[in-house]
Image 1 (cartoon, rainbow, N blue to C red):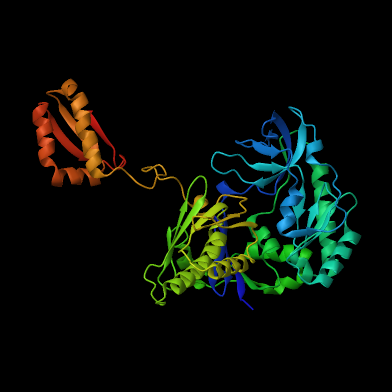
Image 2 (image 1 turned 90 degrees about the vertical axis):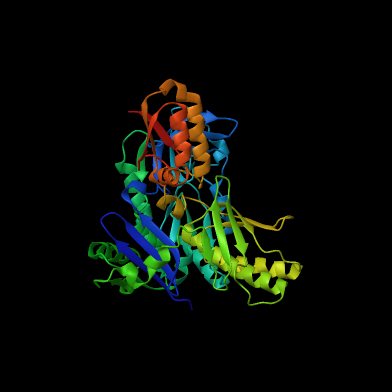
Length: 491
């Protein structure tokens, strides 16, 4: 069995969580005060306007960006890849029956965080996740996770769900429930129901108002990732350790012995070799053991991944080399998707294969590789142009997007104007404005890098400009000026 561990580092500025398999980093989460996720939060929202063409409404939930609420979505169809709904396919209401009007107040839940220029995506169906179940507030479904493959276990859990389901609500039985005691599942349902009802009674504020807040990243990690397959959870903060122990005391007392407080003076992420692995998190190029590599690029529309053989030469036959490199690349791609939390459309340019059986084998391998990923996939297969297409569920901005910001120099383009072109811009500036400053002392301010370039390679060009317009011309390096830019100042 694969050795899985969770390692948590808590500091004053952020909480960092690493999920390891055989010591290798597969998932990474962090929470910073300024970048907390809204996913899972429930709001009493106010309808601002209805867009008939989109069959959607924009709602005010009290944040800078308004929420986008599709009126014709049925969220339980989204569960179909993970959950199998069994009987009682009866809903408290259907979205298309909702007759919203401007300024109306309605309950909504965030399903996706803001991304780019888009506001958060909302749903009218409210679900409160726990460790063993998901409580469906305004639907009456009973479902059992398809990841529980034993038929008898599924049937037993379905019967339990039917007995403990609160009146007027529904339940999804989660994978972790397969190894839980029946009284633990029942106790959690009672806890979630009581917590929801207390929130409804307590919040009296008019819209927009927060009704239910998802737990912080620490508790969500314990709830969603800390299952029986995980050997130990290591944490370096005593208050956070006690917080986890108290939470497990309510939902799963048996798991408390696996939580370890690390008091070693060596930083915990160094101790588990996580810091070194995190350095590669934002690299475009990821090397494979064989010597091949993949290149990951993000655009507004999609994520493109290119696969290259690189230095790989372990196979002499081209087809075998292509197949082995592709499978190795897909293994790493599956890991990188989880690690970077990449979502949306993904296009992979694999090395061309001639034989159909090799292509089918490669696709089967990928389906196996993504089984442990909690995000949902839709596999599109190979296109006529030899591209592998699929989508991965996105509920928040990727880790690399959250950890980075737009470069103030290139503005997100990834490239800057070269020095020779900047020199051309400078000459044209003098051609257009030189007569108006003739006979004066001027200072050309530019980046130190470009100033060095002009001094070493184009002193004669500056001298010609000075003579042509009868100028006293000085050159000054200025770190506040971006690469590829300049200012001409009359002194």
